[in-house]
Amino acid sequence: MRGGERVLEALAELFPSADIFTLVCDRLMLPSSLSRLQIRTSLLQNLPRSRQWYPYYLPLFPVATRRLDLRGYELVISSDAAIMKGVRTDANAVHVCYCHSPMRCLWSGYETYRQAAGPVARLALSAVRNHLCRWDYEAAQRVSYFVANSENVRNRIQKFYGRESAVVHPPVDTRRFASSPCTSERDGFFLTVSQLVPYKRIDLIVDTFNRCKRPLVIIGDGPERLKLERRAGKNIRFAGSVSQRGVVEAMQRCKAFVFAGEEDFGIVMAEAQACGTPVVALGKGGALEIVEDNLTGILFNEESVDSLLGALDQLDHTSFDAELIRASALRFTRQRFLDEFSDLVRQVVLHEKPVANISQSTAEWVTSA
Image (cartoon, rainbow, N blue to C red; front, top):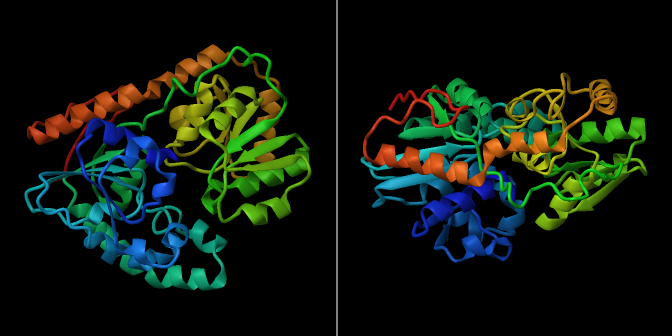
């Protein structure tokens, strides 16, 4: 249950009778809020070990997406970080795409993914990239309205698709992620919570903490885990997948939350701040919209061990107010997302021009549709 899944939960709350279409679904992992819904999967669902191997079926994504037939629906909302925006709809249907990012392995993160891949995967990605980029671009032109999850992604949508978009930040469960009475008595360890994939730059965090020898806990799992564990010193502990309650408790107890990748938005950083926890993050991408430097955390400038070490040293000499940090995170509440997105869809359906400022951080809506 990462940021994209939390957005889907909120959308399902707004539209409780809606059908859900997806490429692959692991029904055993669904929360109760989604398991009650009608969920239809693509042809990928029937392929060998599709729930684990679906990234390797990337060349089949376009045909699987196009075979998800949504004709007959007047309103289609896609929650998209890949190519779900390419589903078939009626010509007169309104298609609102909530975009987490243009597909990273094709566009902004292509070099990172290619360098981290093995020889066979690297060749395969290079071979299919041009075709998938063309397909994804053409699919983006059929979307009626784009909504970006951050100003960072808004810029990517403009750069790669030539489309304008509004910004509605994703929902943060600030009731569950909250300060506790023991927040002022924090333990000395640092924390990161992430899927263990190349673009998250957990390798940079591991190398930094190998050098400074400070205690670090890494929550999360993914294809990079074994390689990272071999790389890590004894001061670094890999906790694997942890319940949401366990994540909240770790965020409440840690000295600071550390994030070294360039995120689309970075909902996990906002969740940490909702717990009153300062965040040390790379000063690029979504972190610039979440972390206020020297006030709610520390931003470092370069993806390097020395830069991150400098930020950790700066953290030691900076005083933080847990209540102020949490107050900053309250900009991203779940109710705020529900209100803003439902208002946007209402205006789109009524053929009204969406309001210029959905929230203080939302850019003026200009549509090329």
